[in-house]
Length: 246
Image (cartoon, rainbow, N blue to C red; front, side, top):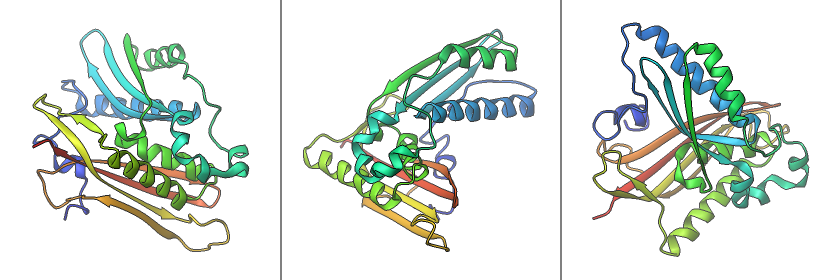
């Protein structure tokens, strides 16, 4: 049953807290604005070869505070550069690597919401520090024309290499009660992944470690992405399982 429900929503309130903080009697309008802000930030990050990771929105009476973390694709290509190939690097659909125009982003959001906005951002360099980074890196590789299977194999090899060195990826508890160590990853891609010669959709998966989706107390992070190619849309699902240090 754990794979049939949204993993994040299933653990909301017990293990995870809400990413956004706001209270309003006009819930539908503010909820739609929340979704539009996330979609706009995700598009801007993707246009500048970045992946949006954490995004927290706090709405107050006089201003809106937005905190985001992002990953440059140029930093994560050390994992999947061999999977892209020379031809795909010349035909990438994303923009050139560079810093997003934070001033322009803040100005556009303020003009749309008609309220002062405080924008804080942090750049990460580790692809496994956030589940959205992992899904976004795989999306970038598929849209660039690379092989999804090769990209997933590169990510799996990088994860196993770090684990063998005894340097596990650590995630701080949302309640500040301890630290969690990354124990397993699961990646699933569905679509026309093999190229234009494949007329039917195929499914590719990579599984490392443990992913107890049927265990509600399991600290599992979940993310979905959609890769848009000339052959159609490819769906991406990523699970990261963290285990608390005993």
